[in-house]
Amino acid sequence: MNKNQKIILAIFVPVIIFLVTLTIAYYLGVEKSLSLGKSLSLGKSLEWEITHNPFDWGKTWYLWLFSLIGIILFEYGLFEDKK
Image (cartoon, rainbow, N blue to C red; front, side, top):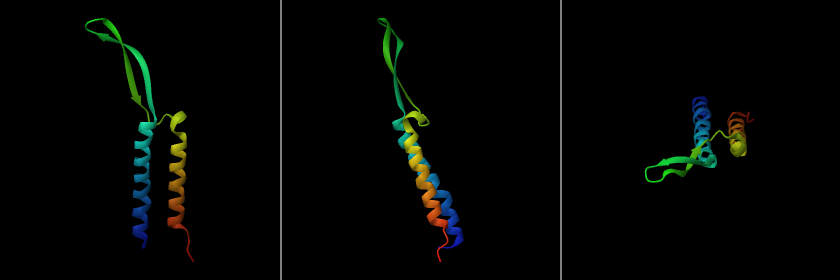
């Protein structure tokens, strides 16, 4: 593999890993909360408010850590000196 191919892989593979991690973290970072909403018939009603936060470190830190380790191992394996 020549140098240009390595540079292209070094850019695109971490970006792909980041996007996959972001998608998974989006679904892991779901937070449900009960809030008062307005209903036309009863005046007020309870509604579930669902928010997605992929950067909620309390819930997704391990996913981001494994992703970072995977990117580091990939980059190290790609650019290590093979004699």
